[in-house]
Length: 314
Ligand code: MEV
Image (cartoon, rainbow, N blue to C red; front, side, top):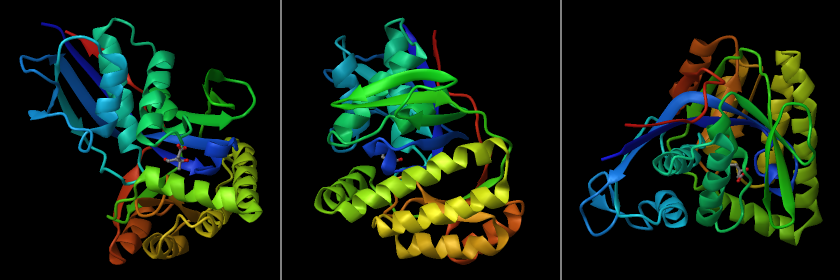
């Protein structure tokens, strides 16, 4: 019996979360925490996940990917994740990518571009039609990516949804030390994306904030290439303020950012917000981590830019 395995990294969004849904640029980096999925044909009447029958409530991303991609016999699926769920670190995207990777490996067609597209389709279904391909493409490609509305140097693939098209590019990022501070509070991406969508629909002011987030992300690209940490940190603080105005920060996220800042170049929430995690760019990771945990956060020093999805069959 064929067994397929796939492993995908989590991600951190450095700049451009939420704004990227509306076509503004974003920069995201893979991290060294991963999700693994193993699949083989099962003996039961339906798919099973870690020994339990699959349900749309508990396994939304997995079920959407299986419904879309698998027409064969029911599968036994096992998942192991080093990524806390709803933490802003790409746990759902890593699961969608590893799931699509394992299914496509069973079908003998596990190309990264195909995996990125299929994982995005699953994410889109789970996020009720509002999502950018940032998370799923980062978890597929690994390293770092730049998302933009035009095609540039180091182009990887494009992904379209409705009238919008995103161009995904490989981005070289320098060795930077980031401390992630998890608030321990769950922030559901679909809720936060829907909240921003309501704000953007109602007010021109929200659309301006989205454009400003885009400007910040665009300005960060050359700063990253030049490894200008003080300037990058200032942009991170700026991005956090804009995300706060957009309504996706929380008092806990603000508190952890403030705690980290005396030991960091800058700090911001990362991912969809509403809970989840913040990041701080620092040369003093221990001091920064201590300050975060003193305020009740859960710090992790992360290595940026690991490999993307891997697949195998045996
Ligand atoms: C979530 O990690 C990133 C968001 O921009 C949503 C998306 O891009 O689909 C908030």
